[in-house]
Image 1 (cartoon, rainbow, N blue to C red):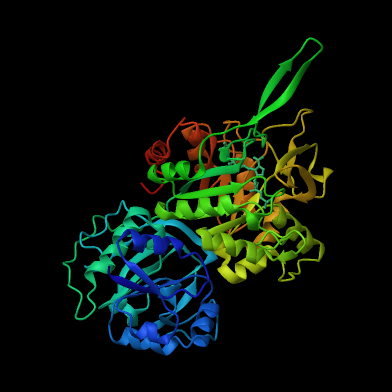
Image 2 (image 1 turned 60 degrees about the horizontal axis):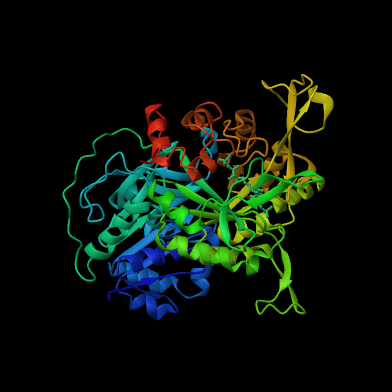
Amino acid sequence: MSEVTVLDYGAGNIRSLINALKLLGYNVKFVKDAKDILSAERLIFPGVGAFGSAMALLESSGFVEPLKKYIQQDKPYLGICLGLQTLCDGSEESPGTKGLSVIPATVTQFNKAEGLAVPHMGWNGLKLRKGSALFPTGFSSEEKVYFVHSYALNSQSKEINEWVLATTDYGEEFISIVQKGNIVATQFHPEKSGEMGIKIIKSFLESFPMSGKVASIPYKLPDASKPTQLGHRIIACLDVRNNDQGDLVVTKGEQYDVREQSITENIHSVTQIKGAVRNLGKPVELARRYFKEGADEIVFLNITSFKNCPLHDLPMLEVLRQASENIFVPLTVGGGIREILAPGKDGDQSKMKCYSAVEVAAEYFRSGADKVSIGSDAVYAAENFISCGGIATGQTSIETIAAAYGRQAVVISVDPKRVCVPSREAVQHHVIHTSYPGPSGEEYCWYQCTVKGGRELRDIGVYEMVQACEALGAGEIMLNSIDRDGTNSGYDLELVAMVKEAVGIPVIASSGAGHVNHFSDVFQDAHADAALAAGIFHRNTVSINVVKEHLLSEGIPVRV
Ligand code: 1PR
């Protein structure tokens, strides 16, 4: 079996990459010391996290000089994301930190003034500038690959022209692939780019020779010279919990109530009781189906996490391990991401141990998650941040996970309830004018945060909460609505538009999708970056492909 060496410095999920390499029939060897780099025949560096911490780790491990030497020898090298950026002189992300200086340029931050959400997150196209063995048949303008980054190499720098293989547009044109000889690096994640990504990894492994020059491929003119477009993401969500028999199932609530209603009668009385937990299928099977149908991301939410200890939530970890074996799009996991007090792994109740939120998250990243979503703990963090006058402690789950894994790995799951009020002055929270007056004709409303899956109301508004979370380092907002959940009545467009106005990070609209028009409405009228849905897909009302066909017919860019 052929071997490929992977440089993993423990800063994120590389399980998908490993699974992709195994799928392609390669044996993976991990770099343990500098010798492993120099003796590698093919090297992949899947960089995740921040530029400064990545370089610090490479320095402290003594990997900088061996990496430079390996690259100078023109042996096959594939850098991914930060594995591209670290090839440069430095990055605005970590001023003063020296990169590997293979490419004479500095990585810069996306210009937020363009009104674009940053990080650049999702599926975008590639414009090839020359032929490459990485794309033996070219790259059509229909195809897209998965990006997630806030910094990029600007394509205007003339000195690095010889390195540029492909560019992508997001407000500005940036370099999405560099290649010189056998050295290649991508700003996107091929291991998260579905079948196209697997093809790219395969081409690297099979066409970049261990000695000698990579074959040149004639340049195929692109079929259009239009700018590439970031697609709007369609995300499938699986709410997971144990049913009454103890099996892990995908369930679906109506306004967060996941039990069937049933009536029991006897000769004395008629009682309405809660029935069984709705069972819509097995988590891994459903996730695989959604991947095949074209889901751009998949979210697993452990919806009873406030009862269980997530660190010992072995079935959920196993779901992630199995899902990441053959699902090559980003996976998010949520529920219970917070500091916890729990028995040690041996289960001994007498030895309680405190696990930090980063340790809990790390367990999920190791099992195959690319992002974690934080619900209740994000509300508490925002409350503290606001009550301390906007001073961050550096200790919250948002801050610690973002520092270790990068802000793109931290999603905030918000569970709001709509509250109608007669005037803007009625409450201290951010109030909006609504086109859907309340029961007593109230023309205004605010959105109240809740915790513990909507069971407890908090005295903080969603507008203020999401702004605090962004300031603390969150990378994305997953915006549910308890009022719309499971109702098929469409997204709460006023809520989504309000949150889009509040933050500059991407916003995923969630709750209420029941028809293809609901998806186009949330993109066109509320400017959501992504739309998440559950029931409509679980019940096979409409498939993800059909949603995307509809969006394309409306001129809304999506990955097909
Ligand atoms: O507070 O960090 O432990 O996280 C708990 C997580 O579990 C939160 O993300 C919270 O939203 C979720 N959760 C808790 N209870 C429920 C429940 O339903 N009883 N699910 C729950 C939230 C909402 C969405 C749903 C959309 C789309 N589910 O995930 O998938 O509303 O549904 P639809 O398209 O069918 O309308 P923590």
